[in-house]
Image (tube, rainbow, N blue to C red):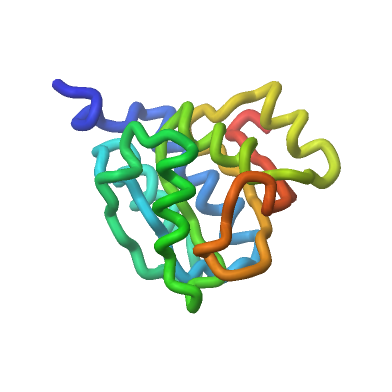
Length: 151
């Protein structure tokens, strides 16, 4: 089977639900989720969003699969400005690169933990950004948190 069609492993299923609980516990109300069309990211999202009190609008986007950080920024630049809190469910190395490149600043030890742990399945980084999505570019966000299933 192709990489795009590869399903989520059992460990990934457990970690996806844990990530969903952790995101739900943050209290952030997500407006939009951009999810890769790969089988394992769709499965991850389905398990994670089940933990949310309210399901955000979800867009399955082919361009996320195997995207570079620059391609992911270009995709985020297309986000409507009425979407304030956005989730991107994607793949490495693009997603970790995106978090690293966007986060010009970081809070606490989030960057150190992300660098040390990488982005295993179900890991996430939380970044803040002020301004319209079309102005999002390298260094304009702050990395405020990072979580991985083994944290």
